[in-house]
Image (tube, rainbow, N blue to C red; front, side, top):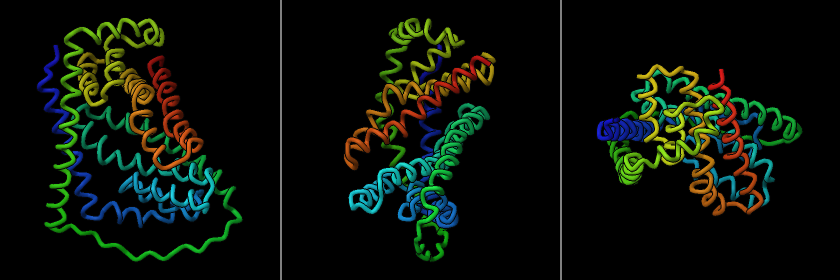
Length: 306
């Protein structure tokens, strides 16, 4: 039986470190500096009025969506311009996840497999970015626009910035812990009560036919409720010498299951409805949730079958 107390402490400490590191990078203006340095690259395939959206995504996805939705409401852009910009923004957003979550959180937890999985997730966004760039270049090839000048931005690696970043990161980590702890306790209860075993038995005939074993199916069902809790099961797979392709495939399907059963309606839908019309919301959900779900399930099953 796994040590739930040890697992809880590992997950909480790793994620707290990730929040603090990310907050420090923001407070020292490293993220802003990086955004200005790569601003010209974001202009390819994106409407000129939306070229700042991928950069703003690095700091605040909410602020990026507010910027885009205002332009759409004012009639300065069309929905397709919004879709292209948001899809292009997924790439810098994924890069942000690499330094904020995957690298500082998952590497200490599951080692180099976290790097492989991060690259697997990044590959999808790179393909999408290439397609968006091609479509955007064709769409905006005859569009004339004068780009504004941007002043240089200096990094602020001062004691004040580091302290502010640490305090804000700690506050975000505490907020996460307060939300995560009840979920963790509920899942531990379900596992000890045998609920996961029953759910595993129900799903086993369906997932088993694709090559997933009982432990991998348990991971998938757990990830559908809380991916951070499920990550602890990866350590067990590693100890039992599961093939790396099986582990990566299991993580991909688990992520797809989480998106399918929870994230699209719990996170994306309420947020999009507050900014966009029903038709735009529906398309954004298809692009931002539907496509990744299809990708995760397809790649996951293919990896397990290798």
